[in-house]
Amino acid sequence: MNRDRTLAGSSTDRWLVADLDGTLTILDHRIKLAEAKDWDAYHAAGIHDPVRPGAREMLWAWHRPEQGRRVMILTARMEKFRRQTIQWLEREQVPFDALLMRPPANTQDSTVLKPAQLFQRLGFAQVAFVLEDRDKLVAKWRSLGLACFQVSPDPGY
Image (cartoon, rainbow, N blue to C red; front, side, top):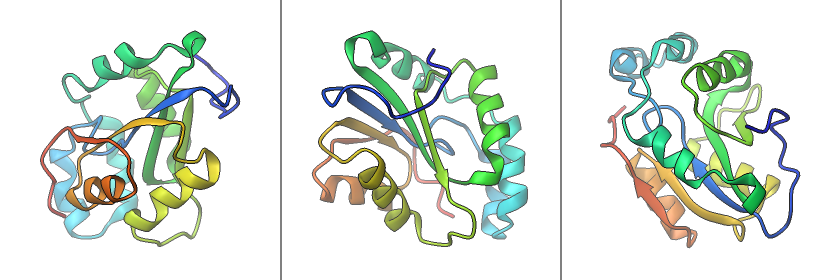
């Protein structure tokens, strides 16, 4: 696994872009925290999430950096949880080459934040497909012309 977690690579690389919370993780035990908008507690509790069956395997099936097939985790989780997030990804053996997180003090809706981050850092042309759980983000990615697969039901918060 690439340990530098950068976007460096060839302009011909193709990226699988995966959401984290609810897509790669099962977050049922955190729903009440999200409903209460207690985002610090919600994200801190993510360290205890189990990995979603099949999600990690899909990333491993795609991940072939030597062939230009890379994995980006794109999450609205706050940047201050980066170390904890990397610990979870490594503990659960989730492959990734880049991790984009919500910048400090950013309060944008994820349907604005995530596409803007992706476009700024990578562009859309190199995206092979997106994995997501939220209905509004699935619709957003598709409206931007990206293939998006919804891997679990929208948690509804």
